[in-house]
Image (cartoon, rainbow, N blue to C red; front, side, top):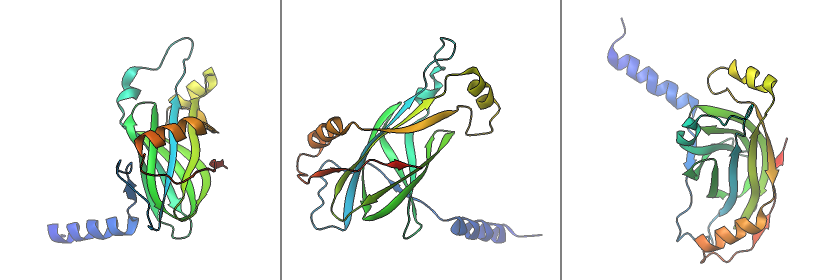
Length: 192
């Protein structure tokens, strides 16, 4: 029979094999790029649940916490989780990342997940706007029924699109980070 110490050691080893993603929160309001190797990615996540047969979804969705986006650095294979800045169906993100090529793989909020396959590139010292990532729930009865039979993390069927709200994003960013005078480059996420 295995000892508790052996079981604990095996658990720690298994966790080490799975790898851990770096969690990225919104940069502090006094953040500056200076001569850092980092860049700043700005964007927004909007979730549109809509109605079905004239009924809005129940209110639990508002209490699921913040949206989180998993992004992979394609050169290193390292995953990072971008945590949006507030709860609710609309939320911004302003995060620092090293320059490179990145690929989004999923969106999560509470126990809901959705694949999100899109790419963007980031140069050293840039402030880049990648767009508003908008997920809209499909409104037809077939999608509703199909979603009802999905496993954990499912339940809603929808589609992602990228919307260009550049002027609003620039205004919000400049109000929040007046000390950052770098040009904001518009490079909308390419969905695949």
